[in-house]
Amino acid sequence: QVQLVESGGGLVQAGGSLRVSCAASGSISSIWAMGWYRQSPGKQRELVATITGQGITNYADSVKGRFTISRDNAKNTVDLQMNSLKPEDTGVYYCNAHHVWNGLDYWGKGTLVTVSS
Image (cartoon, rainbow, N blue to C red):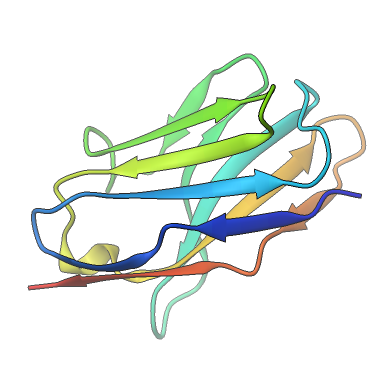
């Protein structure tokens, strides 16, 4: 079982930057795809970015060119660097670990990001 703990959320002004991190209790080797999702008030949880064990990344159109996802398998961490933040980026950001063989999903409890206009 993998436990995920997010950190780094907070309040930032529009145009600013923030980095959120996810620490996994177990090994996140290459068989785990990692991702960041967010849920804004009144909306469903949506994909923000994912990264495979081989480092292949995928981003939501709304964050392309502004956000960067990275992972360190040795440290069991996944980070999301967020630049040029917009008020619509506000939400609770959740870390996800997806086992590519058996389809298991694990979620963190989330970290709140608030972007003021």
